[in-house]
Structure formats: C-alpha cells, structure tokens
Length: 101
Image (cartoon, rainbow, N blue to C red; front, side, top):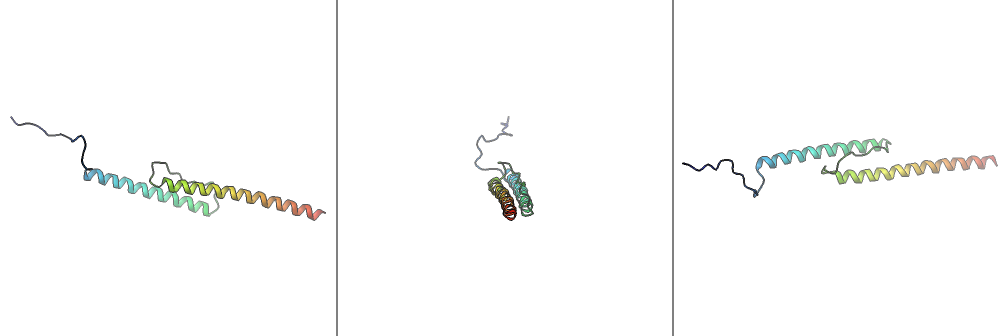
C-alpha cells in the first residue's frame, strides 16, 4: 500500500504562493485607485469652495494617512473661512457705525 500524503499543507509557509501574492496585488491596486479617486474628488470639492467635503477613507485604506492630513487641512481652512467671514461682518458693522457719526 502506498502512503497517501495528498492535501498536506505546511503549517508555516516559507513564502506566499504566487496566487495569493497576485490577489494581494489586485486588492492593493484597487485600494490605491479608490483612495486616489476619493482624495481627488475631495480636492475638487474644496477647490470649488465646499469646506464641508472630507475624504472618506477608512484606516484600512493604504492612503488613509494622506486622507487624514487632507481632512485636517480642510477643517483648518473651514475654520479660517468662518473667522474671515466674522471679521468681515464686524468690519462692515464698524464702518456703518462710523458713517452714522
């Protein structure tokens, strides 16, 4: 009788199989494409004045750190724009008060 050792899998593979590596590459490639697209769309919205826009990338995405930095910058721009509007409104109020005097 022959010994049957069909279906034996090593408990610790020395390297990833080519199929696994290819699947990982495809997954990473899709993740990059989706991340780049999301960041690009967010930049376009902000460039058009939409300071509510945020890059919606999860921490699992390879570009999450870039999206996080972009979102932080957008938040600061949003706050600065709000401060500028309040300052402009105050300047206009003061000008009107001065004109009444």
